[in-house]
Image 1 (cartoon, one colour):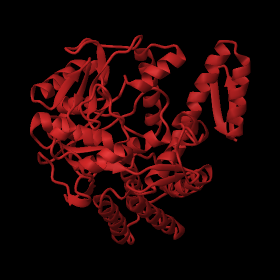
Image 2: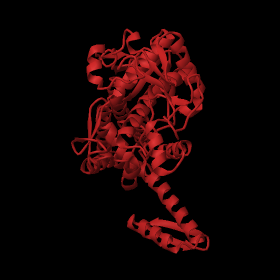
Image 3: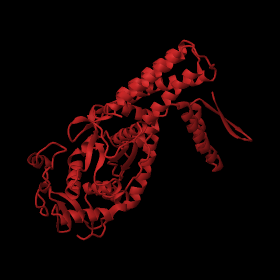
Image 4: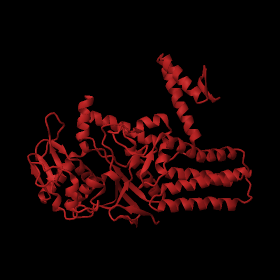
Length: 465
């Protein structure tokens, strides 16, 4: 197994060599749960879920950890605005997160640790940094001595002096140096807090991932990943904290996905182009959004627009239609043997090309082009009126396996059936609740989907119009 990936730390592609043969320890920075996730959050969720799936496809045992930041400044501000306490707010948006990313085809991590549930290990981590002289307490706050870590800047490839100029941080009265960053923040009046050796307070943002990666994966891990915006200062600070405390390399490989633009402009709340996944998947098939994200190499920037998503939908359906055509022909196929070996060989060749693309830094864009070629082959096979069970089954199996690697659902017809059944159940409940307005709305919605309902004594049945 030879997988190459681009390592942000060295700025080059490297052959992946795991710490332990056949196993991968992978930590991915998760969202701050103060709102529904936007498509910028969705990209790393999709990208690194796909990386995980591919490692598994290639026979690795992957231990995948992705955290939730469930207490920080953003959560505190949102809790005040919404009139909810921080834990309740976090619980609500963690639930919403799982709904959204599950719709996008992302598997749950092996562990989703939360800051509030790991406060003891975070406090202990900070205390040990103070003991070693890498951190200091100042009026209830605790700061990391950035200059005490000689290799600070090695991930972002900047010197201390360059970072000092670019940081744009005013010297705080509590800090010894303007580059020092907070490990623990003293609680302000009315804020959520925990008891610590330095008084009431809460963790700084960067410390949580260092502490939880150490607890759940160990001192050194194979891959640490996240969005490009996390490279500095978040991941740079994680390296400093972890390697200062443990005296070991924190992560052997660092992976970062590129930015997302909206209609060719950087996504920003101030520009009013902040797009939530929660809203997109109400209007579009979430599988199409995932396909869209994977159609561009993960390290490249990606531009989102409604027009591009519609174009992606048509492209996605070209592949799924090829599969449906195979499925329908399969019902009438016969056990013919003519040219079976030639065609199964062509299918195997497409699989090898898919693996070659994914082995090269998880090039999903190239892998998807292989799926288009596989669809063309399948269409040509059927056009020639070939009906060998062996070949049709081989085509279908290949589509199913490769789609699964990418976290996509190939059988859109079956998925639609499940959606219809769910709507019918909702309508049945509405009728029981005597909510006839909702019942009629669902009937009209299904009618627009070309689904005809029949209410019988045995229950509600449906058929395609």
